Length: 91
Image (cartoon, rainbow, N blue to C red; front, side, top):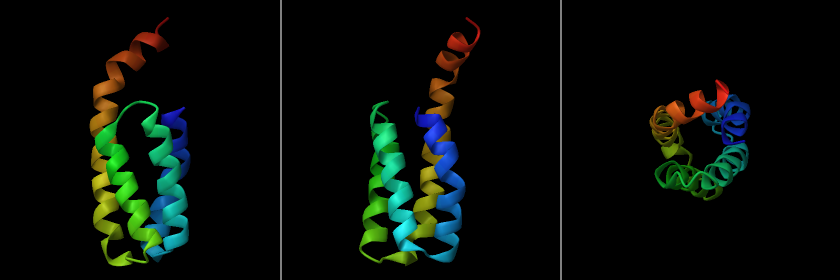
């Protein structure tokens, strides 16, 4: 579920960060934060929470940097989980 939510929200989040649409950033970051919580991906969840809270507070100056951090943490989690995902896909 997390990966499908992330893949769905990432383009929306990227666009919202680029246009400094704080409302859309907060919404997308909230969805990512919730879905990654199911995996116990605390670092990624914390970045998504910070991104969401910054957007809700109207602090749009930090959004691009936080988005880069979110992508970096997603890729780290994806690499960690890839062997497990491959196991399930091959069965």
